[in-house]
Image (cartoon, rainbow, N blue to C red; front, top):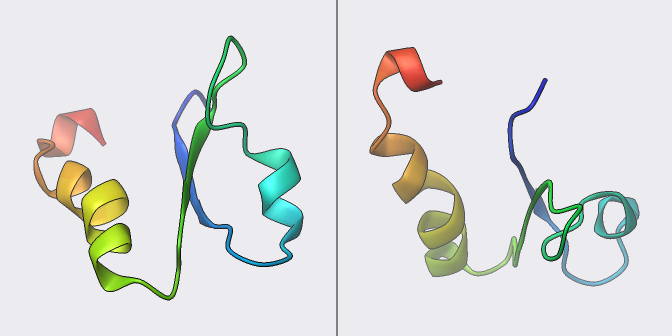
Length: 55
């Protein structure tokens, strides 16, 4: 679908292996799901800045 994915990938998570956060095959970002600042900075803040057409 060509949309980036943001996953909570702290500790042991299957998504950590699926979502690649750097390099040529980057398809998303990992956030610490137990840190509200990390969730907001990587996930919510960028989404809130998009227009409905960009979603």
